[in-house]
Image (tube, rainbow, N blue to C red; front, side, top):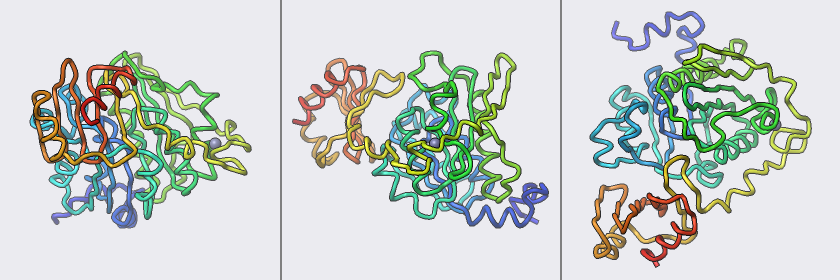
Length: 337
Ligand SMILES: [Zn+2]
């Protein structure tokens, strides 16, 4: 009677069997921005068994227009997206085991999370992380679903290790939008269109209806009424360094070097120190004379000169107010020593 999944079970390709399969599946979503929030909501409502979601950022006002899990209160409190997402998702379906991590997606941080993961969803906003994901998923033989959007356009593509071309195979033959820091903005229907395609592909994989999967790379423009599925099967390269006969997974090797990065379109630099940084308590004491500070259990925000520096529990820091890596480092070391 009170079966929350009754309508989904009535849908023939899922049925009772599919619903039971969903309940036993574990999904990893990398990123809890617009794409991550929407995919997570749909899959949690659909009744997957376990969700692992990771994100490095916190909620800001400019997110509220399209990142559907977050509220004004989250933006006021600068809540980490992973934490706010878990809180909201648990209210929607408390039966799902949800693990949330506030951290950078790197080969080092993602690897321990892959145990038991059935599929992964790309909800990141940059190609550095996507290529790391691509290599990791090939290495661990986990199907995953690429997604990206910018302006009114978007893309979705399902990658099955051993079957389809990987993202690396496609890099030079397909125009990948969202590959660079964009300044063209974004509208939420483009997000919803990408995530509709990502989520439905996820459901097909999770209920094990592989014959229904979209074979090809979908691109669309919701403003200009265009949609196209590109056949990419011939793009699979036998000597691809990520999915070919002798894979070396090149992006897993560069990973340790990316300590400092500019955040896409944010006028922000992220610094990930190699040694253990000070705790938030110690930082609060040390920096109290430098400027106005705000604190929540997950991060410390300091206004310093024309910058705002946000320190996270895991040791990372955002320097807001610059895109210049050297300048950001100099401010960071002036403060932290
Ligand atoms: Zn490949």
